[in-house]
Image 1: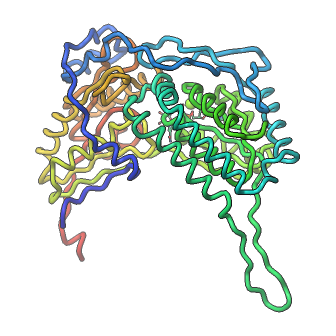
Image 2: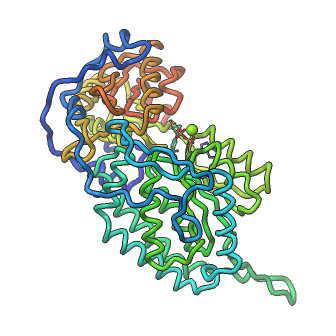
Length: 468
Ligand code: NAI
Ligand code: MG
């Protein structure tokens, strides 16, 4: 059998992952010690600075896009929040404010749900032919492609993911995903079931109504496409609550969707926080269906709020701690690269990240050595710069959480073989970090770190166990 390597990333993404980055100049590491909280001393004993560390300390590149939309999108119009409140959305490269965005709360959710209800009960969207709905979505995909550079720049600016990834993979995938669902619009058939006797049994698929959708910040545009695309193709209307860390790209593309011919009220976008706007959407009696992607803990809250209000059905996409298994007959170099990409892709902020790397004892030492070398070579820096593989983490909360997990790895006795510290002295950059000798019971092997931290565990097996 050839290399037995299992990985946890989508096949479409994986083609992108395997593209080798171009090398970027090495420079000295920034001042780290002053910026780490408790446990800094312990970390520094183990820390090994990547060659590329200080790329992040360079002056940030000015994004080639203007922030045009910061208000809520309700009933086809950009409007202020009812409270007049705004909140800042930050550039993760520096922690500085990109723009202030209208902060939606329950009153705005009420307005958005009312608009979506009207659009569903009285508007043209569910009534037009499926072919016409398809055409609107296809025009939307064309517009995304026409504005691809701006859309990608906005995504990188607000999120910190590399421009190469946003422009090279994600924006094209958004257009493709929208076209995929557009194609479904006129192919959703019912069914005539054979019945006993003189009866006619027919299954008719109808739109559900008003769909409430809550998305996270790790793939803001793809999440938009995955949620809004199918809901609209089926003739539903939508109230979308974006993540407070990344409100900008959804507002931008929602505007394009209206330019493509979407009737007013069919898609409403409310920026704001989870416990306020998000919870109001989950509890709303006028919402017929919820879709949520995010943390497991918040998923439990979403399900409970749905149950305690109108028992609306809920779709959840939550966290993970996916295994990546390297057997003793694997091509080690290939396995190292795949395992590296499986966990470090998108700054490690993936629900399907290969975040537990299990390696057979016979290839373990070689695998650890090569994984360390690969992590130290990973190019961290301004995500707008060519050749950069890893940008900053999304925000200070995630940044601190990841460093706490690193400390917990050290405290629990895992061997820190690379990274373990921040990069530079501003923004939310973290060194690609590798732990070896991890054990099943350690927190770093059990909990979702959602950052650039590889946890390598050794295993042994006897062939008899596999082939009996
Ligand atoms: P989160 O699950 O709290 O946030 C995701 C979305 O849910 C955001 O739009 C947020 O505003 C909303 N939300 C938060 N509290 C809510 C509530 N009470 N009612 C309704 N909506 C609510 O995730 P967070 O705090 O940003 O990240 C924490 C951890 O979650 C991460 O470290 C990671 O482990 C995991 N996560 C997983 C994601 C995935 O794709 N599966 C995406 C983002 C985070
Ligand atoms: Mg949260």
